[in-house]
Image 1 (cartoon, helix red, strand yellow):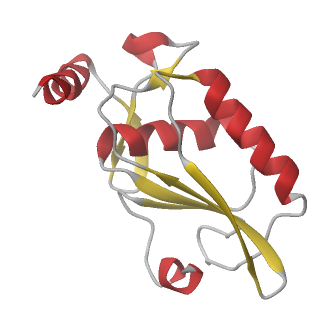
Image 2 (cartoon, helix red, strand yellow):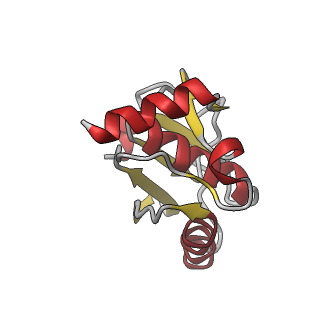
Length: 139
């Protein structure tokens, strides 16, 4: 599975992160994936070179990430978190389903905390985009 992900470039549905130090960026990516088309976030990979560097304390990082998502995203969002050991290095893979949102950061609210994917980047959704996400939910 990891080889297949590494063969692809970052995109609307794939993102690589070196580590879990910046929880806010990870949470933004999870929200953007859920609001756009779903996606996979792979932690323990250098995003430019795609070198597998692994995560030192994968259980601790998994717990921190799961708690950050649970505590800061509304409505409740449940990505799948799985561990993969590859060449004696641990990698964490978050799989985020596309869901009917909008999902947003609780502390920024629905007007300032909705993120979407544009190519391989996360962007704050404007009011028109939020209205479109809500419209899709009603159909």
